[in-house]
Length: 129
Image 1: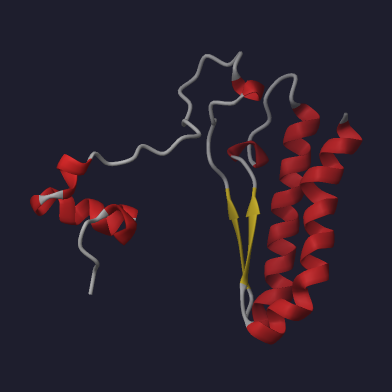
Image 2 (image 1 turned 90 degrees about the vertical axis):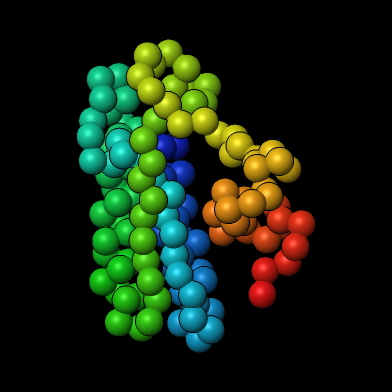
């Protein structure tokens, strides 16, 4: 299992970034490495998974040093626990994988303008200027 985790969370992002680096440098762009807060914290019975995510974080920092001077922004997203099959047995607060959609009645009025900014024009009846 540890080999697969290192392959998925470290080696695959490294290969993809190396493959696309010339195009990113030529055209501008960014790299977003999707990690987890477990890149910084180790949990019992998840040691190899946490280690693979920590390797991914170290990779992100290294790539930032290599590609940053060439104008490519390299960042990592590290969300907390997300409600998935993998975390089903954990009894901690979790983020949901679905995004709530605003009700049409909330779109109107001052409150609606805020939702238009947050969710984008596709949720508003009128287009934004």
